[in-house]
Image (cartoon, rainbow, N blue to C red; front, side, top):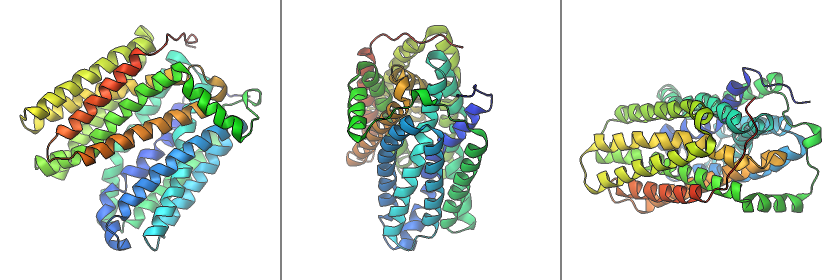
Length: 396
């Protein structure tokens, strides 16, 4: 039986889903030290690529598995894999072992990335789901602000390997909290019993369903614009504008706070206007802010106007994330794990492509980032315009 939603459940799910940004952001300051210690300048980049590959594979498999046997057991197994693999990263003896352990840690972290979202869909729908997802984002949103700072502090005192000791402790805490406090939200009556071929067909069916495809498109292009911003801004503000790393960290933290703030006003907006209407206006806000950013990139006025335009983009980022997920999963309660997995895979794929384009087009200015973000905003608008009308269950 599914237990009722308790007041601590969103905080716990937020703690679990934050394992993704903790695992990526905390070790970014240690890239040079890792390269030196492992004797390969490209080792950090290879490890990051392996991590995202593991997330993509892990999300697809964990989602389908959780629809079959429930959410709790795959989540516990994934968190254990993540914890053990983080210890492996700590003990890595060369680049190859480090990359392999990062891949394995991502396979485990994938469970913490997608299953909390599926658990939300198991319990609530429509405006109620948007409210709970926004509460998850409040907890999760702290990670991108604090993780790089924590990694830098650890690195200033200890070896880079201690960063992965911290990751292992985070994973262990997640295992204990899940074991003690998290119920399985998928009742036996709603679990599926299908083979591998049927799982593949299910993913194809979900992908072809119009409500999922259009809302997932909004979410993926929104994530791609966000990833382009994350990939490009360190070089823009530190390398081009000459900001100190602390100044950039403050900018990043301020924007992250804005992102959290918009995600927190989302429940009120959804309650008053509905998920569909909020998406319609949020995607226009993203398009307008990205257009302003592109204009500023073509006619440089300095760092502060660019920073201001990026701050405006946070409205689209913070509002489109939870609402596009609600819309994508609205017709897939029976296999929410698979739908959540496919949604996440599309987001990571879009983000990786946007980051690659920013790198390939880099020309020592903010133009590549702004043009990629503008293209993503236009694509998100096109996906939003193609959405079917949805009717959600009344909020409880």
